[in-house]
Length: 373
Ligand SMILES: [Mg+2]
Image (cartoon, rainbow, N blue to C red; front, side, top):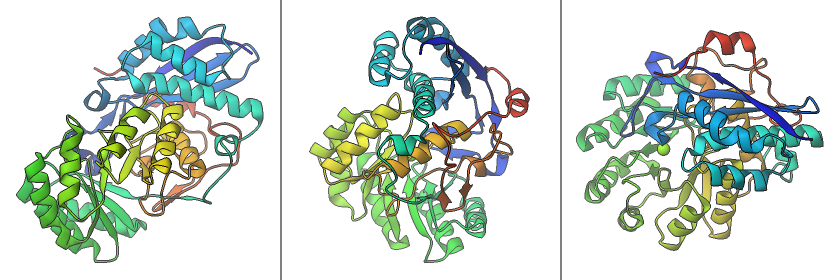
């Protein structure tokens, strides 16, 4: 079997205004993503999604489509799509950085491999380690009253765990966490995500102030500039530290483990260039006695399916202890899938179909078709 072409569909999907995410990493109010199809000479088609935003990785659907057309498609055409380890390395050698772009194409190769094998991806990877994936909600860094209202809404939907964005202003961060805790009561599990917005000293002081609200983790308290910063914070607070912006590759994971800088890695299906890298990070965590959760860039259905397969198959992902951010459907008015994924508040699972197990609804893809600006 050979790859014959890669077809791309730029979309720009608005996020429900009341749930648009404000954080120390910027404002995420719409998603300039790229959907893609890798076509083969045998008629099998693999689906992929580049869930990119300029503020996260410096990519959008224009750069992704451009690099796929000019750098990736020319070297992939004529190759066997099931040689994923080799093709991921080939893509990396032709395109520096741009991890979400490479990951979107790699995702489609996995979809093809699953369809060739007749197996859902989680089965291809060795089968499930859990029957479903516990998930948590994410609350924007809005003013405290608004954040509390969103949190109460999430509890009404059935969420039993959530995180709130902080890292913007220490006093306001504490007030937001207090307001959210008061709104959700003592039983809902609550974490915080600073997106690297605090200095090391502010992080220690602010996390210590937040501990009275019963937070169960603090995500990326400091910028990913120096691994010692997070190790220093971790040594001075009493809650688990989760690395997100600090951990894109398996090498990052090794360094964080060696320096004692994190308890948990937030693994994405795209941050490190694809599912191969993501699965390697979960293996590093497992080997180092640490654990992972699955983090999110508000993926649409294609990449959400990849996240669920990853969480279903990975022992190194401790989703019961640190629920995953598989929550795209709660942020968008409509998705791009022909059949929606079984994602509910607090739990996600997957259709028992080969590959990613999803198909595009081209009416929705055309409805949201738009190049980023
Ligand atoms: Mg994060």
